[in-house]
Image (tube, rainbow, N blue to C red):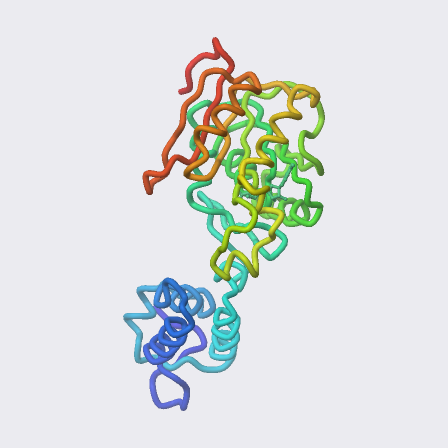
Length: 291
Ligand SMILES: C[S@@+](CC[C@H](N)C(=O)[O-])C[C@H]1O[C@@H](n2cnc3c(N)ncnc32)[C@H](O)[C@@H]1O
């Protein structure tokens, strides 16, 4: 095992252990929630080694480009820029996606939408509000042969999603379209993680100052974008027997009603790993069960 651009002690640099403890302390003083985790994530990615190796080789010196890149990353993190934007990448399912300030950083709970696709094994999916392309690309990656149409009202987000699609290599099965509904047609499944944070909510600086407000905030209730999109379904020319929507933990009742009003009368609310209600699944009456 080797630690690139680092050398045994004596070269005048900082040891890995000292760099980690100093940056962790600085992050903690700045009020960052997981200071040690962030310091290790930044250094391991920049040095190109696994986290366990950082600990095992704590006496190795960090020198040259790695030292400079890590110092710059620490400066950025102290301004509360999220780790994913600093590194330019975020893992989602089996994919490493490029992310920057044009898109929301994909969250682990959103993987529930991909789980739904895996249960249902659709031949075609419409994803509304694709952002980085995380859900659309993971579905294309994991559901063999599935054709995915993914939309977003943000042209900037779609640039990121298209670049991710090329990198993932499922481009011929995923089409990105600007707007909400894309071309009229029949799909097996609609998935969406639309903005659902109530306007005016005080968020951590990582979200409030860095992630796109248009990806986070709806109106005062938080359910307005979901409501607007569902209200547009009848006139969209899009049809699907099943819909899965991510939502805020306290929005199950309201979103359930909206989904039901949109014609998906059989409802199920699924909880995330933290036990919060997170996804509403609506089926048109008579749709065969999932799985
Ligand atoms: C919460 S982010 C989700 C991004 C991505 N699907 C994910 O889960 O990481 C919501 C996305 O929906 C897009 N959006 C907001 N309103 C929309 C609408 N009416 N139609 C389509 N996309 C919309 C935003 O631009 C943003 O990219």
